[in-house]
Length: 437
Image (tube, rainbow, N blue to C red):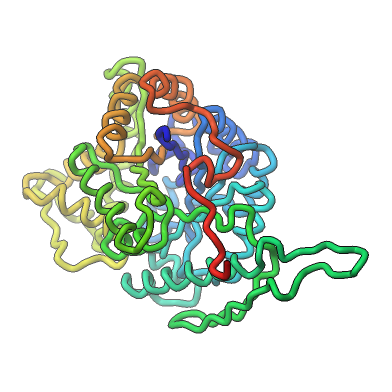
């Protein structure tokens, strides 16, 4: 199977807080269906298996800079993907759904509906939600504890999978002459009672065309990796420059799948990749310089404060920055760990930390250089493909499809087309049997 490519949108303008300011950005179109239609069609032209819409359930107003300088508007993913299902043909359509601030019945029904409307192209990115701002919108003073969130997520996924199996594939007779619409013997009531959920079922929609929409996951903590090994069919990881480190992480996810009695090939590992593409290396570096220049210093400090859960703004910018990271955060632990690795030597000033965190998110180079980097990791068995989070939209995705995809094809690691019509077919995943089969 060739390399898998996915296209992710978190911030509507691209993979940075300030991407909306870049040349070619269209912030006035961030609530325009045509904007996302163009993105999806460009990715589909490049043979991307997945279009993934990330999501959060709050406005980042913890800091004034979050309102002044950050895009805090986004469409509801299911509404958007339902519309995109009608203007695309092959690309998979995945949405972030929080298991902390939703109920399994609703999500099972929405995802099954999207799978039918898209003719088998739905996907679900499972998140547990990490910010207290989300808790405040759902009647809580703070987010659930990290371990509790992941226990809830595991039960949530189990319930949703059970609901998708409510009807056997041949349960519906549609027999006008006899008057029988469905066969009652082929309907299953879940009757789930667990730690977090009591759900009788059955689901009031047929079993999805894919059996179950594809399940994605991105948790990089120990709890997140354990959940992925047990339940995920694709996981996108924090990128790492070292092939050896990427290979270790890849092998860890595959081993976790095997330990859960699963075929490791049925868990696709897709490192996140944010390319900055230039005709020359210097041109690409200048573009990254522009991203940095457009990011207010206060905004960078507030972003760092958000993830560390303490205010760093009073620390002198040019003095060594060595935060106490001994107490695990209740937010995104992988980000805290990334910061810990960066400052572990004790030799970085706060200004240098900010700059390094910005720059290590991006892979800077020419189309040849970026294709070589991806090919090396794919051939080394350190990735099944990549989840692309473009530095700018629409410029970044257009440049990647027009310039990098042909280089990947030339290297023989990417065929650039579609294997079939469903999301599962194009990811190389089987249709799971019903639990009642």
